[in-house]
Length: 356
Picture (cartoon, rainbow, N blue to C red):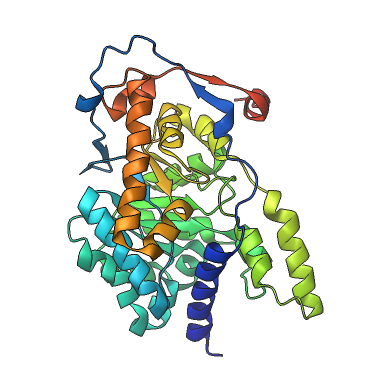
């Protein structure tokens, strides 16, 4: 199979596995976070505001439609629905990895449809750091042009690369490529993990290189180790080994709540990604210092069911967030950053071990 077709086929595999299999692993840490209840909130719930800003853009909600799919003809309709929702609610939206469409321009419309139906949305393009290293700024510019992106996420997915039979196991030179990109790139760069989390040390290196925001992509949501283990051909010896390896490393990573607590003192733009499942999780993320709360898997099946189902899901998430704000006395999203919280269990245990 040609490389372009192989990449495209893999994208469809990923989508089907996420819809049909149990791909979530571990725990995000949000169950260990309890927002302090305000018994006398002194606010009108009907007057609360979800509006916020991210990288200079005004948004109607801190909910980010996180990167999901694209790169195969059958993914276009899903991205169309996701894009329409981003436009309707004035949300930020991330594209799936655009590698397949850069390799095969006939697939560009599976991503471009997002901008077509969401001309005013804040769109975050998506390119892997390995592709950035191997092909340079030219590929990054092509990813931005494809969707007229307002920012570009450079994703880190080395656990997935280690499990994939066709994965790239060489991470050398990637930091230099990131630094070079940030030096004079046309749009802000977001450093994004894809399920294993970003530590404070890695975030600090990213900001030092010039990235404008970090997406934690923490442990506790969809596991790419599990997804790749489902893809492994268990009829072969190597496939059985990769399947076992994927199952083993499904428990690898930094819980999202731990990532947020580590990054909070940096006072930089942070997207909470990885295992957010409710509006309460978004509220907890904002209390832990995040700017946006990203969701992918909770929105995927509704998007496949159509615009009505997706809008109903987003409305529920927003209502949960509003109730959380009401019960903490938060008039606006920014107020949540000042809400006190209790931290329990393993999350507290992990953070108590930090020396910084």
